[in-house]
Amino acid sequence: MALENTSAERIQELVEKQRAFYATGATRDVKWRKAQLKAFNAGLHKWEKPLCEALWQDLHKSYEEAFMTELGLVYGEIGEAIKKVDKWARRKSKPTPLTGMPSSSYIVREPLGCTLIVSPWNYPVQLLLNPLVGAIAAGCTAILKPSPYVPTISKVIEAFIADTFADEYVGVVQGNRLVNGELFKHRYDLVFLTGSPSLGRIAMAAQAQYLTPMVLELGGKSPCIVDKDANLKLAARRIAWGKCLNSGQTCIAPDYLFLHEDIKEAFIEAFKQELAGLYPQGTEQSDKFVHIVKESAFERLESYLADGKVVVGGHFDKSRLWMEPTLLDGVSPDAPVMTEEIFGPIFPILTFKDRSEVVAFVNQREKPLAFYYFGSAEAGWDIIGRTTSGGACINDTIMHIANPNIPFGGVGNSGMGSYHSERSFLAFSHERAVVKTPTWIDLKFRYMPYGMFGLIKKMLMIHAE
Picture 1 (cartoon, one colour):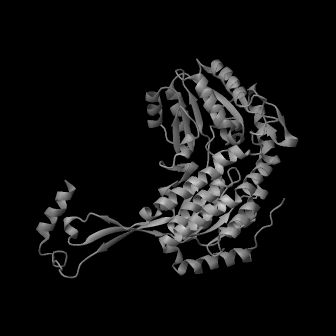
Picture 2: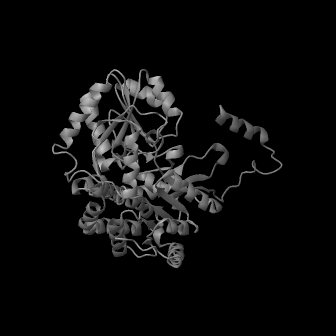
Picture 3: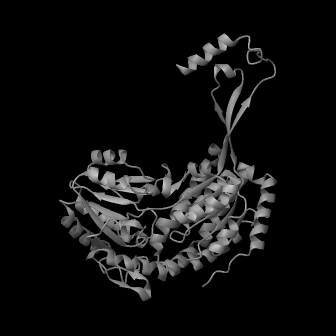
């Protein structure tokens, strides 16, 4: 199934319709927002089966994995927003310093306005609809751009959105890079983009003329360190699960292994055993193992197999876009598999003697989206304190994305801004400072010729001390 590119005229029409609708002020009413969130929830229930069927068709993603990593997270975000949007949107009183008395000070959270949400193909439901929860809760309109690489799911999403919302409020645009270029020509009040760093740069360059605020959720090479005191059986199981989830096509997938040289062989053996536990019949015929999204991605992954020695896995079937989870040993740090984001079930192995080697290696490269350490908690906190990443786990992988109470986002090359729960609301909001001053009194100290300057200086210095 091929997607038809949305025309430039339709994109222009959609942008204008949403600006006109936002100008009516309808989206500012919090009760109205809650009604839209409830409609969103009802629509997701109605379209759950077609969405899951489309995920299977495009990615060979099982219902269980589709629900846990896609729809379930969206249901959770919607439910949280329905319960808490009144609190999130409420005007908040803040203290006023003596020099500002008798005024009152407030923060008003107002919607940014008309927004664009661009999502990738790897989690095409979650990464498009989770930001939409924030847009709706904050009172924004949204143009949604799903990925052309998963055409079945993108068409189902378009039908779901059209069935649930009027397009002057939430609309869908389809197509390839030409459509991205056309979209980025227009002015938005926020662009929320999940994708590659290269696409992030294109969007930023195009929107620079408007000084558009952006949330960028990108990617990178997330290291996975296994120290000599790690619980190898548990580490191998959690790492294998994190790498096999969506067949490694996850922005926060552990990208490469950094194994302490003392436990390297033991870990490789443990990885084999735990992989067999996850897939007793192997991954080739499993309905719980996602396939590679397209032929060009498969060919890129296949080329990485020449960058080292296969010590686990290595089998594949290009005709079915299936590739076995694979460990590669003897890899050069400068090889393509170590310089490009893998986005697949291949795990290159590096070794270290001392954690300072890991710190130096990670800090010399672009800041990753995720960072995984297996070993003692004390050592984990130490190495986290000497490196940086969008998020991190000690003795686990992936799970930081599943907690709505902590931010999810990148840093540097792996992105900017964060979201989930209230942070999604804030991503689509402007916190407006408001000072309300009474008219029954008008203190003279702030006016020229500053006759009370000595007193004011003392008051200001009190705050400085």
